[in-house]
Image 1 (cartoon, chains in turn brown, green):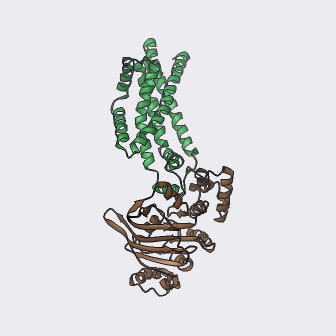
Image 2 (spheres, rainbow over the protein chains, first blue to last red; image 1 turned 30 degrees about the vertical axis):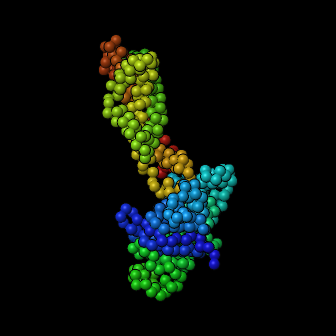
Image 3 (cartoon, chains in turn yellow, cyan; image 1 turned 135 degrees about the horizontal axis):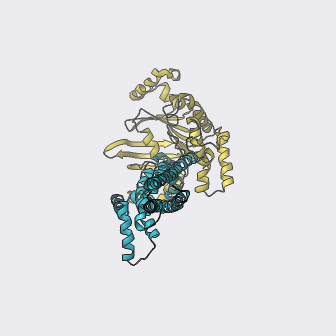
Length: 263
Length: 213
């Protein structure tokens, strides 16, 4: 059995006195698309942000390709925080795509994609831009390289954001509701880019309300509700015969909205 | 009013513009340090900055100028009055600009910083490459505003003996007995300068990289 790309054990996340994630155990298989689904407030985005260490889990451990992320258990079994440099090096394996794109407004599309290569990896400007262009071409935006985010549509911005993450050759890509801020007619172009990535065998973790995408591209589906991971399984188990009552109820709300062809 | 009197006022405006520009620039540099201290988690940095700002915002600039002008020789620093004027104006505008910058830094969307964290920026790189440019864009209009305020406040440095527009106008008014003409001309010159700054500001705002046009 191959090592999971990400392994989460006994993860708990509290904001103050509110527990938003409770005893999460999850393995993200390498080279596959894992989807986190669930109603609003179920904690799926928080879980994804914990995987990126944008939120620090209150308890439990996360390992990325076998390396501890953020915290480790010392010989006495006590949880200790790892130094910032170590967090950065583990994070380097992870690319993140945000709901709000989060492109830097003072840089062009090309600037956004090449910035980290130049600033962090000290790649020469021309080479960094060549490599950035390859990624922009991949998301179909080489002719928008000189545009600023304010001159791009939401779908284009999100594709630039995907290119920005890909430019650093991550092993794992995390998507936090990548189409939720888009007009319905713009979601397709982003989902297509994600589909292409899935075909290439990228390890992906996707938090999404796009049940259609989860059903057709997802290879492992995890269903969260009220901070608990209720079910993880193959899409066929989840969508064809949802056995868990809460999952059934959740899917019904989607089927009611015209997604019945998935059932 | 003769052309010669008007020329004298215009010449005096060089002092107004010069002192204001230098003070804005020095004040800006001090303000960066102050705002960093304000945003610092450490009380030992934050408290002195807060005290500095409440002092320079809470005491009239005129009083500050007179205080600095008299204080410097008292502690053995015999500097020309122009230096005292620039110190006073710089410290005063620094206090205001620091508050603007603090607001700007606090308004940098968290997601933009997270995006930088995710691609491996160090905290310093996040500050230099992301926070500073974005905070600058957010505070630019307030900075232009402050420049205009300082230009007008510079009339106060006449009290420490610098012959800028206002002082020149006073001198000319009392020697020519034409106060209305002279002060109208002075007002016009101030108006033109401030207008130009506002115009340049609007142009600059649109020229910032990535600005919505």
